[in-house]
Amino acid sequence: MISKKMEDAFNKQINEELYSAYLYQSLSAFATRIGLEGFANWFQIQVQEEISHSQKFYSFISERGGKIKFLQINEPPAEFGSPLELFELTLEHEQHITKCINNLMNLAVDEKDHASQIFLQWYITEQVEEENNVKTILDKLKLVGKEGHGLFMIDKDLSTRVFTPPA
Ligand code: OFO
Image (cartoon, rainbow, N blue to C red):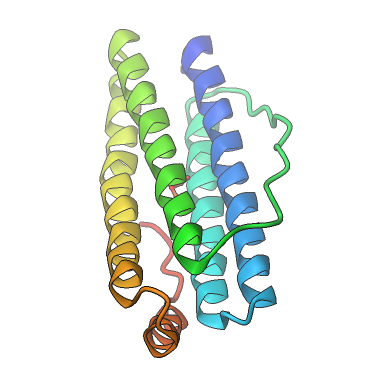
């Protein structure tokens, strides 16, 4: 059985993951609006990833006999800046999620909740990958600057991203 503290913290994380999906959906819509279809695809895949992250928490709470509680999801911004700024914001957001996951792990350690610690290890590894993927794209964007051809190539590259459901 999961503790009430852990249950509340995991329910809050479901909300964080669903807000992430909302934010990336909004970024995808914005990218479509400015003609960057590859960027829009990348963010759309990110939406699917975030929903799958929330589902993993959902299943875990249920399996441990806890109660699922959906909290209100905040409204994401609808206007964003340059292509570079889209990924700067993404990195900032993922760094925030990494902090949330680390705090969950700290709580699981305090609560001596071994099952939660093992469960959270997946997210710790996932966040390393998430931040690294975004940093790689950011580096490329910095390299090409405002150069149109380079941006076109990156957009083409981002259009190839596909969703792989987590194990
Ligand atoms: Fe982007 O990792 Fe979940 O939120």
